[in-house]
Image (tube, rainbow, N blue to C red; front, side, top):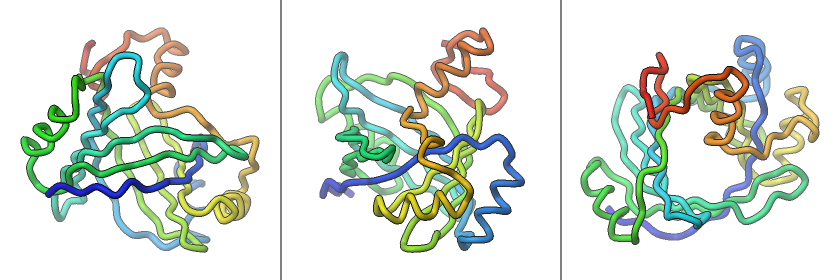
Length: 193
């Protein structure tokens, strides 16, 4: 099914050093919704910022595939503002790929998997704990003023907000640990570049 309708997404990302502690804090202000396994493959065109994310999402009850244009338009007071436009949402990986390739000269740039724990936060926010093979980050999505309020309730200040995306966080991690770059970053870290 082809979608459309670009939407503005506002979010912050926060480093998580202690998963049990952050889960306890999040549970004190939000309601657990579900846990998803996600595999993202990022497609891009050389020298362009606009990317397409092909995502396979499995919440252990059903599998969903989506292809989404995603690009940053601003960072204000530490909050990332990105445009997301869904190109495809359905069950067919092959149909999603056809739509991606119909958009231009997009090629695979990288791939990673993560486990995402999703909570309904206060003030119509969504709080997610994303656990990657190379670290864990908390995201709070919603209206800017509400994001700041929820972050504060969880013990974070604006200085804690991370503007860096998952790809660059991964590159910083491998550099810090003197590891080779992998194209397909999986739990177990077995995918060589």
